[in-house]
Amino acid sequence: MSERLLVERDGAVLRVTLNRPEKLNAIDAGMAEAARHAFERAASDSGVRAVLLSGAGRAFCAGQDLSDPAVAPGADLGATIERAYNPLIRAMRALPKPVVAAVRGVAAGAGANLAFAADIVVAARSAKFVEAFARIGLLPDSGGTWMLPRLVGHARATGLAMLGEPLAAEQALAWGAIWRVVDDDRLDEASAELAERLAGMPTRALGAIKTALQAGWSDDLDAQLARERDAQRDLGATYDYGEGVEAFIAKREARFEGR
Ligand code: T3D
Image (tube, rainbow, N blue to C red; front, side, top):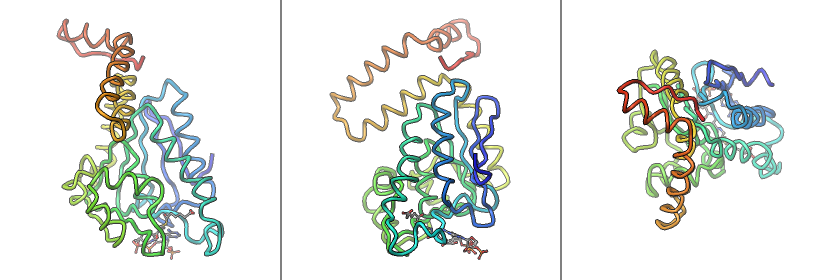
């Protein structure tokens, strides 16, 4: 595991921290792969029931390390995308467990789209999201062209992608791109609380919600109704559904186990 990516267990929460603060956590060779491996391990480890993704220092992530020779002008950028970013975004979106991104300061380029690939984004008031790509002659990658219009609508996505202007946390909240904005000194606590809360919920249900909501972006109503039926059939057989109903009847707090 790279030291530029810290991966730590905190109860049922896996904390994944981009750890290159002197370069605003710009992603260099190996960091994206290490992050992808962390998400893949989270998928296969039943003890992990939520992931908390954050950046060390004053920024979340400044995107691709532009000083990396692998992305020097003339290099095959498609190769970097295929090796590093696409597998990472796929691993995050395929993980049947909630991913919380805690964003402080700037999230630029692939860093912005990494945050938007999380299920729930909690941002510090200082946070700003910058689709910086066009400013250096590129288009948003890491799923940006797919995610942005779905989050904020076509017109706003186009403006963000073409102009590369910073989107402040409060504006991102008003546009529906993120879940919550908190004061900077509350970000660590608020995001950890949220991840811990999600980790104590019925994990299988949260995974089914994530999968169904994503599928709903491309499926028609009939397909989605069938998906809901099938998923509900599976969830109805889980321990957590039994526990949830029993706790409701008994008027006590449910103790979900993620199975
Ligand atoms: O195939 C492929 O892989 C292509 C994929 C591309 C994906 C992308 O992410 S493209 C977009 C890449 N990111 C950017 O274009 C953003 C570049 N950074 C900035 O515009 C600014 O740094 C920020 C707006 C993010 C922050 O500005 P500021 O003034 O707060 O900080 P700073 O002084 O610019 O940066 C602090 C240090 O981080 C500085 O290093 P130094 O001079 O103190 O040694 C700066 O060079 C470094 N840094 C920031 N971003 C990057 C970076 N170093 C390498 N790559 C970066 N992306």
